[in-house]
Image (tube, rainbow, N blue to C red; front, side, top):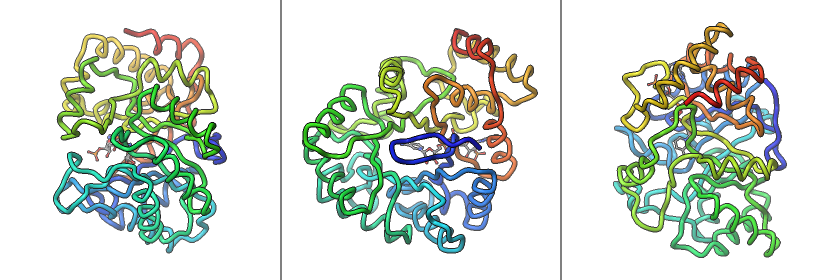
Length: 328
Ligand SMILES: NC(=O)c1ccc[n+]([C@@H]2O[C@H](COP(=O)([O-])OP(=O)(O)OC[C@H]3O[C@@H](n4cnc5c(N)ncnc54)[C@H](OP(=O)(O)O)[C@@H]3O)[C@@H](O)[C@H]2O)c1
């Protein structure tokens, strides 16, 4: 698998999400999926301190702990790029996203210690602000990230679920204050485009109250921003819409649009030309975009892993990219 640059890190062009490892996906299967990903050249693995508190029998920290056991068994920690997140940990047992800890300086400094302990490592490669916390001054949040980078516990920082103006303000502040800058954005993004009003509904469904934002997905303004700031990379989470390309019954109302019906036709045509699946074309379309987007996918079995990894070898022609980009 190709490698690509993310700030100071060299990461595989596809990233594997470990969100449900240790909860929905049981231990032995999770280890085998991680092994399979690395065997095919993957090195970029994503988790968070709050994965996964929401499924039945779920618990914050379970994913990090599972990764810690896998890392211990496997060794060679330095070959891997481990990303985790802070900011969206529920404040008390039983709480959800309506009551999260946010991005205060002391929270960030405490959270990294807890994540390192669960992961059984003395550094994290990439540390994300999981949400946008508008109740804490940005200077304070950035000072927290500065402290964990300076202490050597974190190699690089990034943000997730942020609007463009907040990203740019944070990056400018970091430059002014001599702090490390966010090197990328992890945002919801796929080939199908959600209805324009779906972000607000999504925030409401997740129980987020004022001051916190998941801010929906990657939008035209983000794409415009990265075209002119190509060093700032995008990591696209849920690129396969949790299986909706494979199982249309999984398509939510926000993507059941005429626009996406036309996109499906373009996707299926390119997939047929390449002898690939629609899901593989979605992943390849991101990796072949300019600037390239890093898909952050997840799998629950080996067949899904093999299929998704196959996307890394697909090269879409400029004509195929144009057809996919303009289908609407
Ligand atoms: N920053 C954030 O706020 C945020 C939010 C969400 C996720 N994330 C990160 O993004 C990662 C990926 O998120 P996601 O799970 O939503 O991603 P996704 O790749 O869109 O969905 C993964 C699910 O899609 C199905 N799938 C994947 N490959 C398939 C295939 N080849 N054939 C058929 N079905 C397939 C599987 O569902 P089944 O298991 O049902 O078969 C799999 O569990 C997470 O692990 C997490 O690290 C970040």
